[in-house]
Image (cartoon, rainbow, N blue to C red; front, top):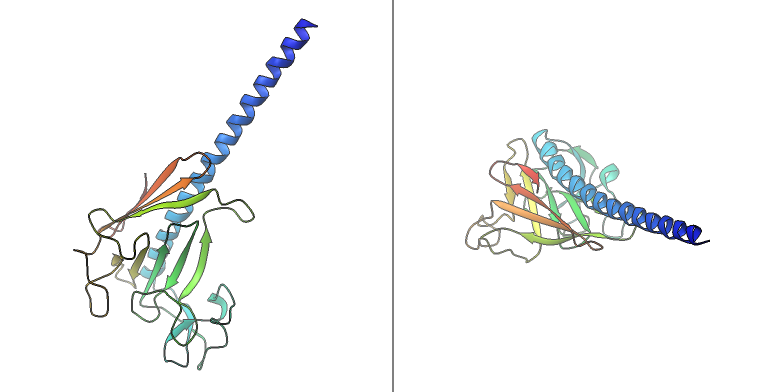
Length: 219
């Protein structure tokens, strides 16, 4: 009887240790997967811009461009039935990504050539895809905890817009200083650090974007 009890205790300890190890491994892989996906999407917008990929677009009643047709990833009252001309595929001036301190980020086409991404005046959107850092149907365990431009004040705080110009591949982070753009504080950022955090383990991964070289790396 004593040996049986000892065996049960040992088996319970082994099972508990194995379960903890498997859970820890799963959490680590969730963080690594999110970091790989985010960095791949940054490279994706770089590739789209360099190849001058098309985005289906049309003009709304205010004369602004909006995503339409097959490239419209969601349907809302502000994004449908706003075209006053044909929805045609054309390359935008630049592609971009918007990153916030949340578990989602957005891929955009800067159709109106203004480095902005909000809902278009007159109806519509320049957003063509929204991603979640977590698998569909799962709990939001991975989130963006820090968005940082070393040595440069962020505006707005905690949000970064990465843009890549068509064909030239020129990359800008929170573009500033040009006509119609915010003033730089004091210069336009050349580096962007996006830190992902797993809320169960507090482990982090940082994606660094270098606007000068275009390099995207996971640290």
